[in-house]
Length: 204
Image (tube, rainbow, N blue to C red; front, top):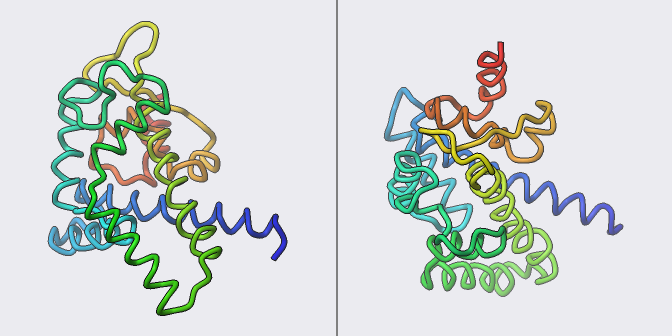
């Protein structure tokens, strides 16, 4: 398989992994299937399990803490007050959400796919492990670090979030319009695909 095709496949996998989390994120806001909260939450729970064995119930709680107390010491996604650069903040962010049982579970799945289904380790690494890790960095950058780092003039209350207003196509490709982050905090029950329209309506 040509290297260019491998890289493209890895990027597509990363994009799809990010889509799983975005689906779960919208389920946390009740907009995946608003007519039936149970089905909505079930879809969110399945998406999070497929993403990295996360608990929907636990992430639902911490995510709304983030919305109620954005970019503060009560925000579980915020930095520790010292490590404000990307890598230190990302490490703190990941440490807050990972656990040994989840790591063990993913390792068990990895070896089961290799040992029972005979999927080559190279394929698992290239099209599962690396894209999933890259997806977490992508989500962190566009959903936490970039919109919630403190600007020079200080935060704008009450949302403490900024927007990266890319053209619609690039906004979608980079992180499912997660760059329209201030709009998301101001209108948390708007699904991800409507955020560019919300941004445009505010600018008029």
